Length: 137
Image (cartoon, rainbow, N blue to C red; front, side, top):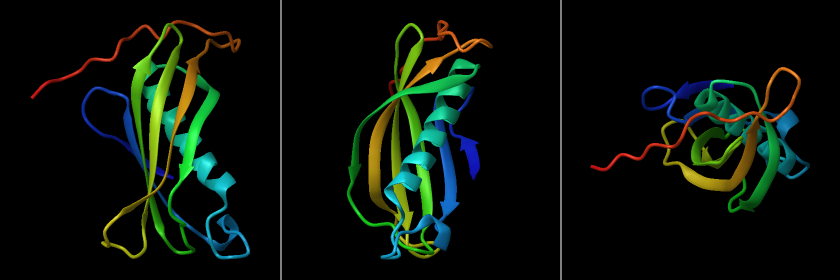
């Protein structure tokens, strides 16, 4: 998985790219839902850990919507954004977009939210220590 932090200063947005290989698919040639969730969780982890500047763990996933099938050979782009910050938790919104052929228009295939918790070296919750900043144009 390749990932890039979009924006400046680790602002809580990450983009990752994957390709769907046969071992990611079910008997219909579509991406397993569990594989999609694993990629989404990884993107949420990257966004939250970069935002917090420390290790995070997944506390919860909320409302995962599967909108379109992702097929064998599709390029998948995951976009993860920190959209909320609590004392030790962060809410990360993740979109999984499919690109059927290189350069084709991307289509939203799956979306959901993950709650990630900042932890210390003993796995105990610790303050994120950073608030979301909003910019207005």
